[in-house]
Image (cartoon, rainbow, N blue to C red; front, side):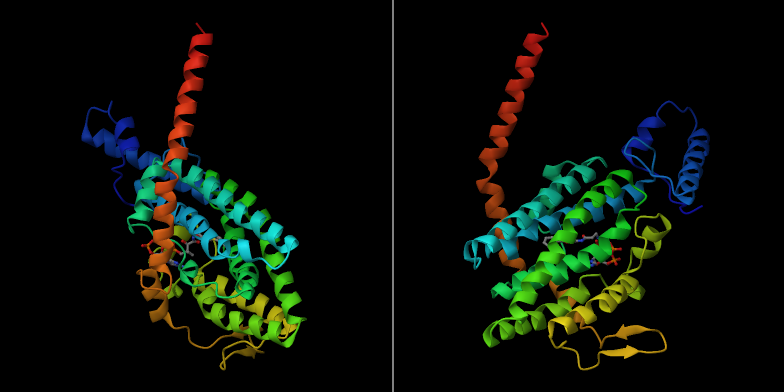
Length: 341
Ligand code: BYC
């Protein structure tokens, strides 16, 4: 058995309403839990209508809603450059990419809604600072090269993390991830191609690429989350088949894939301790400044306040769109009811 917790979620309590004795309820709960654990062990998908332990529902809701918030807040750093893209081609690519991120947020909010929370509740949690989003989006985009670094490095890191999530035990999340990963690979490639153009350009362009790379390198390594020893959720989420690969293992995969790409671009990696370990066949980086990571996660990064303020303003200014959509839906439903007699 993976879980011993007593389930107190409303869905479970409701299904148990007909049971007469507490003993019968416990026996039934144990059976449900045993069947859930067996399905996880068999690598079956859990669907929205299936029984699940309250803690499984809660952790999924936490992770998926945070992931959705990351996609939507993640539109802001690159969005800053849409009006300043250096050519029509670059502008079209950037517009499409930022729009994709908005779409990812929508798939993920929909997946999270299947767990019983409304989109309005999730957005309130974000705007009131109760929900997290990825630390990486609290860094600024000072030059055009930052747009390249986000695509190449941030989307590259996101793919490493998200491909295993396509095998997540919760069906709606896994299916959303399959669609998202297809788009992320275009995002990563356009970022690398942008960096390649800069690195093959003038001295000024090469310098701009190097400076942006220096700023993004360490925050991207932090994006995979704390070291495994400090990861509070990993053990349980891995047992439940939500997370398939640990934070440190994903960080290592990213390092091994990205160092040769940086070398190909002719960029120097801002880590004097970086070395290739012949015995393990892996790149090893120097110590990561985890105090910086926790400071950013706790709301004190370079752009935390700016990002949340921008989202709050967008939410307030977008109220009329939500109201109009609701009024239209009501009108359509009324017309349909009338047509049916
Ligand atoms: N930033 O126990 P741990 C994108 C928190 S967007 C902030 O290891 P877990 C893109 C963690 O939440 C893609 N907080 O947690 C969009 C926990 O705190 P709580 C974003 C972080 O969940 C636009 C605490 O630290 N990807 O690609 O097992 C443009 C302890 O951590 C971070 C996802 O969201 C962080 N980086 O593992 C371009 C992927 N890391 O919740 C690109 C889905 C950790 O207890 N999420 N924390 O208060 C995941 O895979 C996992 O949630 C994580 C963390 C690997 C991020």
